Amino acid sequence: MDSSSSSTTTRIFHPRSALRENLQRKKSYENLDRFIPNRSAMDMDFAHYMLTEGRKAKESPPSQSLYQKLLAEAFNMNGRRILAFKNKPPTLVDPIPLFSSSSVHSSKPVKPQRHIPQRPEMTLDAPDIVDDFYLNLLDWGINNVLAIALGTTVYLWNASNSSISEVVTVDEEDGPVTSISWAPDGRHLAVGLDNSNVQLWDSETNHMLRTLRGGHRLRVTSLAWNHHLLTTGGKDAKVINNDVRIREHIVESYEGHRQEVCGLKWSASGQLLASGGNDNLLFIWDRFMASSNSPRHWLHKLEDHTAAVKALAWCPFQSNLLASGGGGNDRHIKFWNTQTGTCLNSVDTGSQVCALQWNKHERELLSSHGFTENQLILWKYPSMVKMAELSGHSSPVLFMTQSPDGYTVASAAGDETLRFWNVFGNPKAAKPAPKAIAEPFANVSHFR
Image (cartoon, rainbow, N blue to C red; front, side, top):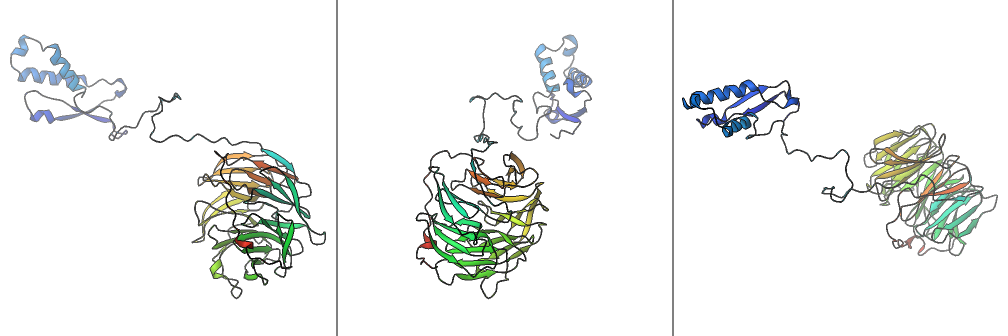
């Protein structure tokens, strides 16, 4: 029944005629809140009955039961209910529900709201970390070991036993370290340097396997692995694919950026590469379209950002969805359909976007920011409603990475602290560690 209608339909039943049983009369009531039917209509029906039933009605009044029948018919109690819903009425919900097992009648169990701690689980000192937006100095490997570059040294923090070790210290003239990235096998570590070289280290033996030279002319600020390929991005605006298994390691290059390349991320399939730079550009490259002979064949050139694009994150539950974040003059998180190059949404965060991490377990995105709040923000996707804001750092949160199980996020900033946040929840039960992929260095030779 349309709630805007001002009339109701009342069915009046007449005992003498079957045809009159279907007669419907509509009457407008101005005082519906009193739930009283039209008295004159009820009196006319009663008079009609008296005339059609003969003179007996004049000698004796109708019985009490007959009067109740007519009263019920006048109220339409034998037909449809007044103010009835046209469709099946919705289940009424108590405005103050009682939280007991007997009071909940739902076809689907209600998922309890997750508690999001507002303070870090742990804070470690990170002295001498380089306070530079364009660098990438933090990575958490599949081996559950976190690597962080502090000046000219790379340290390892083992999350399983909280042990700390030093794996790399480069010469002053070669450093500082400008980027680090774990290989898919969880054992080998790529280290980009200010002198334009990239070193490959074995974290178990603390030995350097080889140095990749000749690809870049300036510092190497971004690294991304794709099986046996190590992609490097530098201040010289170059993006290079290096096959770490062979002596002549440069196998493909991508040319399109005009300034420093500060963001690199391969898609989960290994086919698409996203690169962001200080030229405010975001490129999507197709690995199978690239070669050393045709380095400019990008799939999409995206120019919507108005500041440097460092923060990049491929969505774990939608393979063609990429999130990107802009620097201080942009402040936006943008979402892209990488098949079409279409911007699906753009959200103004109010501050510099330094890093992005998707939640692997829920449809959520975590962003880290610079001035003025230097906070982390957890967003619900796709509504982009803020779920939590996490404060603690006193300078821009430049670097962010997450644990292999996808529950803990580590952040590092120029305030020389490394903080751990249980922002994505806690594992319900201990799970076996993911198996490492041994392919990248399966047959590597020790090239120097």
